[in-house]
Figure 1 (cartoon, rainbow, N blue to C red):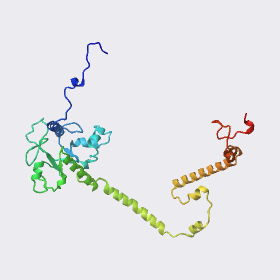
Figure 2 (cartoon, one colour):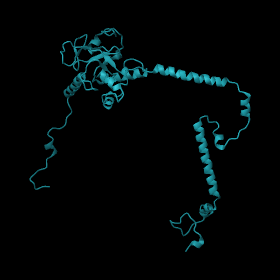
Figure 3 (cartoon, rainbow, N blue to C red):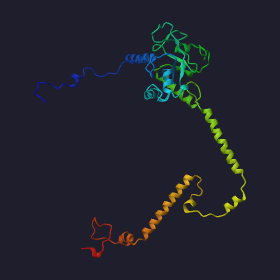
Length: 316
């Protein structure tokens, strides 16, 4: 190229501004926009967030009907299961893994406007500007400021008692809160509890089923152990019986499949031994692999005849 009157631009001429990291103010504005979207839209169904609203162990908000559609079988569900699995990350496996949040609606909202919620104690609007929490298991939502002002660990709405670790921040962005929620759900799972402080389903049924399975086996084993040996059994055990080789070695194996496999392996070993014996008696094979010829120094050999003895009359 060349002789066209053009020029080759440099990087400095093309890139006028160097890449820079966003400032703290820009990061906060982006996070506030994301929170405002999550306060008004269900991330599963992408529909406006309307009551009844549920929350998982991470403090995220969903429409309850969207969670029910997610828990339905794939052919009956009307949402994309793969996207929901990626979003939920295994936090919701049943309705026991969510808590219905009891929000107090804002009375100033007019018809046609999206729902807004307020703290029942302070009257502040819950959203990105005010840090909100809810209590497990009752689900009543307050501002964090109001919960800190409570003198006792009793809900101000229903007077139900709770523990400080069961105060769940809603749509938190702080790393300390996220770590607290992860530690809490790990401790609950270790104790066999879900996010709603309910036990995992089916534990009692499994224990009862295991007991029903164990007791009949123990009774039958005791009956067999206590049964006296008859004279026919003694005579049968005293008389010697002839067994083939395979069944003789697998006589002590109680599992029928294992015993048959052992007998098959033994038969294969016997066949290999017979073939080795036949090969040892074959004169032709002996002449090819004789030890006396291997000890003799081989002369006049090349890569074609190396390893084999050539008769004297066969040389030219």
